[in-house]
Length: 300
Ligand SMILES: Cc1cc2nc3c(=O)[nH]c(=O)nc-3n(C[C@H](O)[C@H](O)[C@H](O)COP(=O)(O)O)c2cc1C
Image (cartoon, rainbow, N blue to C red; front, side, top):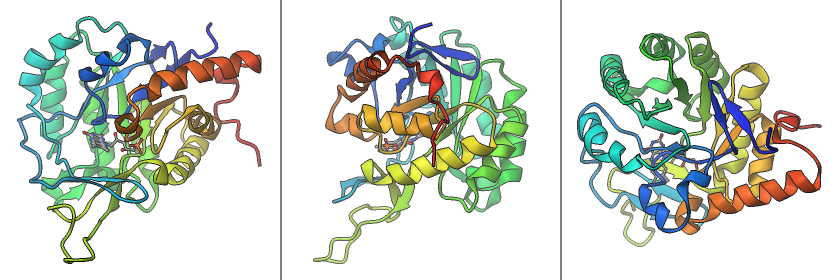
């Protein structure tokens, strides 16, 4: 077993570094060999195409990035016919992120994706509004998560990862509901809620007002969420939230993550993931340790 090998539920990854949904595309192959990642997580798709939110929908603040992309995507059918074939040369696990506005819509999307044998697993984005429940995000209600995950897990044998939102009172309650209903693993955290206003004009920098906040500023918040979930819920965690370098990755492993994803920092340094993999390799070799020796081993 190589020192960086790790498991994410049913998947074995040769190294523990992937990319966070929505922050990565095949354009990164201009910078490095994508097969050197542990896995690839694609941008969230939905049952039908979405244009996304009106601009401006991204602003860099002093402490992190705000985005309100609004799940712009071509829809599941176009994704399968036009996007998936571009991943033909990819030999590492491909994890497809999807979302929906009703439970039936999530299920229809998953049923269609199941026809695609190149997909190794799914990351279910539950940070979106549930139109049947006054637009409250799916991921904020344990009962809704139970129904959603039970329905989805009955439809697939592939890795089923539920991506949690941190914008809840008790993330552990939601994580437990996901696990008990059939989730194989959990991804956390999605963006926090944020806002930015031009002090000169009083106008919101983001057209829709409230946006998702990400980047290095959210790392301590992500770490404590990972630590709390890992302490109480016995399934693997794919962690993200401000990962920029190999030391950040190590913190997440000690907190209980089995895999980390680089998100916002990909925009600053497209080589961040491969640099992290290389430096983690040096770290574990120099210290004669394996990744699995430190997962969840934070001390106080
Ligand atoms: C521009 C942008 C687009 C994103 N799009 C998605 C998305 O489509 N689906 C999703 O689950 N998360 C999406 N996210 C959230 C990231 O996957 C990640 O959970 C979050 O940004 C925290 O990680 P980071 O601080 O490393 O960026 C997006 C984040 C950014 C910055």
